[in-house]
Amino acid sequence: MRRIAMSVAASTMTLSLAGCGVLNATGDGASASPTKGDDITVGLLLPEKANTRYDKFDYPIIKRKVAELTRNKGKVEYANAEASAARQAEQMQNLIDAKADVILLDAVDAHAIAGQVKKAKDAGIPVIAYDRLAEGPIDAYVSFDNELVGEVQGRTLMEALGSAADTSDKVVMMNGSPTDPNAKQFKEGALSELNGKVTIAESYDTTDWKPENAEANMAKAIAELGKGNIAGVYSANDGMAGGVIKALKAAGVTDLPPVTGQDADLDAVQRIVAGEQYMSVYKSYPDEAEAAAQIAVTKLQGKDIQFDALTRDRVDSPTAKDIPAKLVQVAALTKHTIKDTVIADGIYTVGDICTAKYKADCAALGLK
Image (cartoon, rainbow, N blue to C red; front, side, top):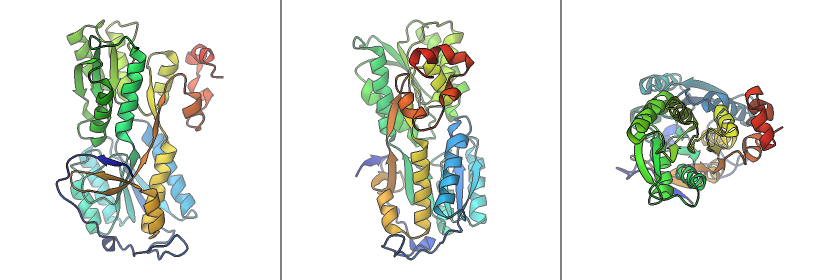
């Protein structure tokens, strides 16, 4: 069992299954006594659209899996907050008022949403934190192993810098949003690989994960350090990596330093093919999204053994301890692993990646 401590727990929340109408079923689907059948409504709240994964992958995969698990009787009510914590609170209230059966919540602001999580629980609606660990009395958490994400980013950046890298090499850190608890874990994982090996010359927490904010921060770093004095850039995700690279090019940098990323966005994969971005972290969205759908349905249908099997990990939030969790593994995506990751899993085709602009680069990598 893997434990991820999000922060020091302030209190222990006692979650009541009776409060959400779930019987103490102990068998599998055949012997359990579910309180819900297949005609269920799953509320899905995703945080923003700057990262293209949410609309392109998470929502359609969850929708398809819920339909599959409920013989096409279950439905998904989806809303995207577009980086607004206030809008997400309204969206969650709408789901509570509409009496959704369960809510999958990817929080814009993990702390600010805690009150709405409690409202949902008080209304008998289980809340499952998806991708980001929200505060409040959540029933389960589904995400990737976030510290491992940061470790993979930091380790791969060190590999790019080479065996001669030392503390004379200056690295800029472009971390994620301070309202996203995942960003802290990515940063900690990366620092475990970078500290003592290179110098972290500048470090930024990037508001709302926005590429334009990362671009502005990188312009500041270039002005402070000089365009020729940056050995590498740790960027927590691909959208920000794009902003970082824009700033470097605008400053006249032609020999780009290695830049990390995360999420395997199509633009990022193409930048990797072209040699502009060194790496991304490939996270299997089908694995994460399908697990979330399975956990939501088994929770509603009282299939306790299946629920326990799906949530063997445990995590702590600032408001709860020992939260059942599913932590999905990740892999480094470089120009050498494109075939074995996003293409092998059907996320993109060679045709998606190798448009006219990238034909020659793709050919050099054997992508055809």
